[in-house]
Length: 492
Ligand code: AHR
Image 1: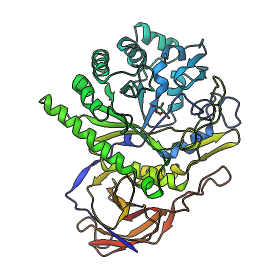
Image 2: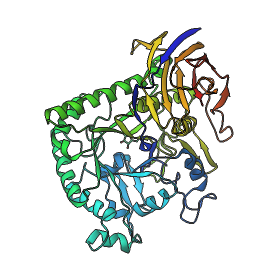
Image 3: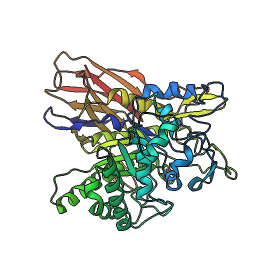
Image 4: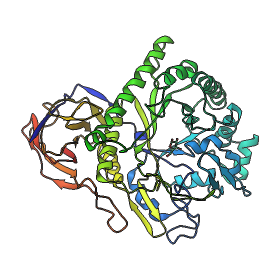
């Protein structure tokens, strides 16, 4: 048996989780929108074409942010084609798909009424410029009496949509992006666009494009160069990360979220370095608005300009789910600086929910999202860890357990541990002063064979179960954590 100790202290607080950390992403690509959240004629769809079986699964996740409409899609997006009664079919160039525009801007806001989530809109700064960004902002947020606000009202929305959060483009650091730019060029464009948008609506919060991946040659310098240009206009810098199993051993894959930790910490330092250069106290925060595991399997031929093709519709293994959990803990661990996060994407494409003509079911990652959305909100404590390690090829020695401590608003203390090893681990949490002597300890865990997957026939193959409660003596909590598991201990 391996051993690991986590120590927390009531005075060592990292920060409060922002509800917007528990977000997701709706992009016009694959079958996220068409054949996903929207499928007129499907038996479970309402008269607006919104799939109710999908909504019924998504609502309990209590999503805090919904990012829309892309992604890469936003770099050839013309928002005005998606509103009003006459909507032309257009080419979704980044994805080589047909965009019918049947589901447009108003439909998104109508669909989003099912959630208590903040919208994060992406403007097209790949192939369009500041004025078009201001136009869509005017359409969404200006009350009335102007060209675009009155167009919105004619199209059925008397009240503004009131979108506060805006991404200034998407992944413009990557050569795959339509309208890819050099850092200084993009930074200046973000500055000019931000100036125009703030002039129109001073209440908006803007996120400039940061790094889309750590393997790019321009990482992390891109972030510094961009922020040097647009620092005064932005509140957030966006980061993206997808972790794939391809070419990795199981220990390396399971420990890869440590690269996400490092990415966050590096870019926070860059933000603070730029603030120092500017003689500013401002803390630019991180919007991690795309993150997930996969994909590992290339899609087959999706056909020419398809509508709603089944792209990356992967039912994740429990091994993937453990990596997903590690990524989520990396975000929560930095609650002081990561304020927004969007799991990508919401349905079908690496989705939390998988839906086809037969029905909808939760992907394996759903159980982790639900667990953390339900139980990991509140005050995050700084954890000091020590104990056995796991040998990896690419990341050196890594702690066997990845841990996090959170106190919920009702006072309950939650300790989370991901056991990345094939061994049982004796876990001790030093938590003197954190809970009363007579607090009640309980445990729940996700623990399956690494190749377990959910399916329509077995939608709960990966699900949370009660586990043996740890012992609490008023100062330490201790017990055994199962191999390859995600465990939550509660002191209530
Ligand atoms: O899978 C979603 C895509 O991944 C997004 O469009 C893009 O931003 C990212 O590269």
